[in-house]
Length: 425
Image 1 (spheres, rainbow, N blue to C red):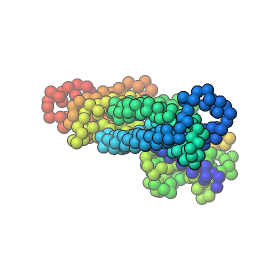
Image 2 (image 1 turned 180 degrees about the vertical axis):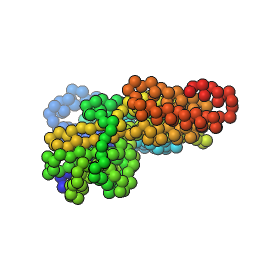
Image 3 (image 1 turned 90 degrees about the vertical axis):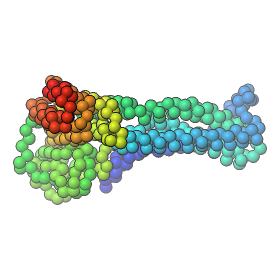
Image 4 (image 1 turned 30 degrees about the vertical axis):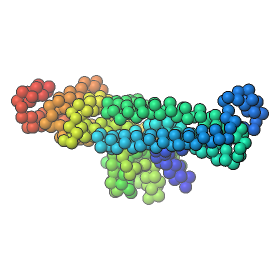
């Protein structure tokens, strides 16, 4: 029961973290706490003496305080509505022009969430101050500190609004989107590659006598968490061969793992509980998530409705660098689980599968565009220069290049352009 709650909270945590309402809700609660605190602090001796020393900073007139707070509520509300409208326009434009897959990264932008949260928090602060002012009546001096802070918060909101306009206008630029996806994906691949050195790489894995473990739902594989499993049989010698790579789609009944010995149905169900599946493809850039986003941007740019080969070339260039990192990974690695007698074997995405997912769609949509094909050939050739590339991965890259060569000979009608491309081989 406890482990089920833990798994649910872990899933819920990531959903909340990528929600556009995460930071606005936190900041709104913080501003409400500040409003209540400042209201109670009005009667403190320190605040009363401060009001006597610098009376020009504290509003002592009831009508003036009410007018200021009313003006701030209306102005900040308009500012908030306008800012949210801009976010919706940006998301709509990004979805239609680039790829729906880039939306989560735009939504989860912490800077935008903090700015919107500050707007809403200031608005709630002013509303609470107005309510307090109405409750205390003409004794407006009892809310002078709150009125002054509301004015200060509104000035900060204006500064944030100018920064928000600049930030949202640059966030939607395709160059920045591609660079952000590449940077995040490259760091993720480097982190995974460094972690691989702490594990044992496997070239051949004997699993003929292993027992299959079939998944009972359809979804995208997100990971295997050993800590979610019960401690009953962790002292048993067991080898778990996890088959899918990160973000791979599994159908109900597919084999998600194989184990080195027969287990009871209860233990199989417990083992299956450690696997995490998602109904939607991961919104992050881990695994091949970032490369899929760049591929979709390139394909979208090559569609007849947009026809933007410049964007496709930029996406292919970044994909070439990510593929250069990916070809150095071992196909499988094994790791001993701490405090158990278990060995978990995990698999990386095979280069053959990665080329099918990433390169094939670009090759299909850009088969008649010489500029994109030129960059695609250069990107694949660059992958061959990685000193850590395995023989199998090198053969798959060369096979993809030969397929690309066949497409060029078939679809490029201009002989001069065809010769220029073929010279790259």
